[in-house]
Length: 91
Image (cartoon, rainbow, N blue to C red; front, side):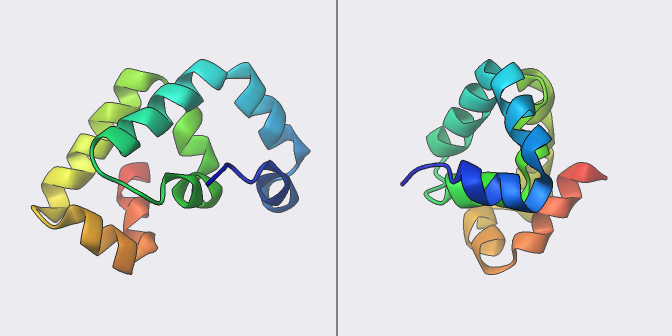
């Protein structure tokens, strides 16, 4: 699977792609972090919440760890069933 930049650009505007380019290291590290903890649909998540993935790596990890702790052991299943739960990290 790959990141659908065309879809992201259509939904969030062309500037989002420039943001990705300017923050490619954070984007890559944050994608890798989600993959490492067991998410298989990372690119779909990026398409839904692209700006989450360009924040600084440590802040991203803190937000994701908070989300995981809030949702509990079956966090992946819960997030796959209800993608709106990702909004918790924006609180």
